[in-house]
Image 1 (spheres, rainbow, N blue to C red):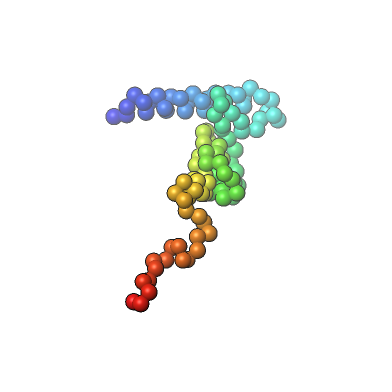
Image 2 (cartoon, rainbow, N blue to C red):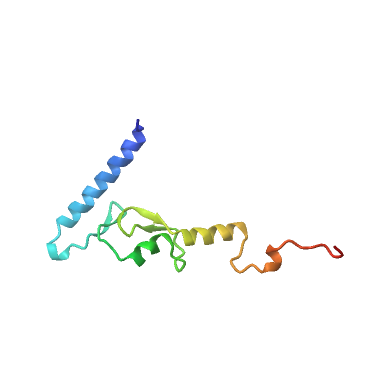
Length: 109
């Protein structure tokens, strides 16, 4: 059985989707982009090319962790930026030398 919060989330998503579609249909046909924001939430109902879809989830060139979905409503996670941020917080560096990552052998053994 779904909780009240689940039904609330479904209702909000359905309402935002309907508002976004209504917003696009209110425009002249030649002005419809099917991409924008509604109530501050990004939406994109256009099918994009695969490189753009994969960039939503892995874009090492961006520092943004939350990015607008390439297709759909809301935000996705850029795991490349999340990984980089986690490494910074943990004090790890991407270019760590083998000396710091390899166990040291005691002298004379």
